[in-house]
Image (cartoon, rainbow, N blue to C red):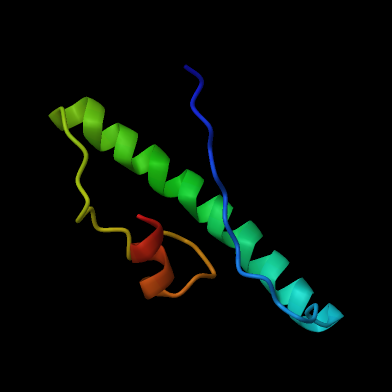
Length: 74
């Protein structure tokens, strides 16, 4: 039996303008960079203590994202 993955999105009647599209791309790029930095810290935590810490302090993490975005990313 093969497992099928379903990816769903909402259909929008219009496309974003160029400015909005560029903003989304910039946020996505920063989010991915921050996610990698958080993952490095989490793996360090795992190898030190044997578990991940979903409350790991990431406030000092150098990122252009807001604290809310960073916590959501974590």
